[in-house]
Image (cartoon, rainbow, N blue to C red):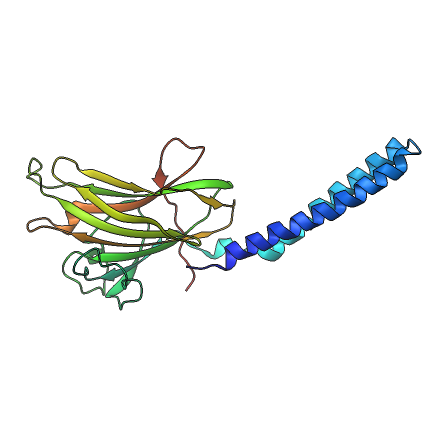
Length: 251
């Protein structure tokens, strides 16, 4: 996971706090001295000057920590690396560092376990395990809750309770294992979800890396096309989840 941007945010917040404290201290000293002369007009002028300086400092600080134009370099989509599923499927530990069978860009919402077969040059005939990476760029600051969804359907024997389990490890920004566990569905319960136990604080316009590995156990007779996954998010002020509008990470 990339940690450069979160540390820059913390540094920036500390710097702004220092600037505000110093400016307010100057304003208080000035206000006390002027109060002796009952010169309220001078105090107001000083306050206006302070606000202008603070605005300029914040603008310059934001541009230094997050240079203008860096966000426009990212195209939409997820970068998906493809693997033969580990055995057992919950053995996700080495998947991120393993050699892959190829990769592709996914720009939709749901992605089935045979999605890689739609792309040239990936020679993995069966269903796959995936390493999915993308940048989430929030439209507003605040706490965000992430979730992994699974859908099991498209079969002729919908009435049979054939269990499908998908194992997930998902991190966001500097939060490793934000979601870690098992999604379980069958012919009766066709949808499953894993929701992060705690939110992630993100800032408007500042990318956070979403990094997930997924591997599933499919019983005999179940096709990878019948099982789909997606990564979703909601701001704490929103009532429902939506697919993450991901952007491709840099090389």
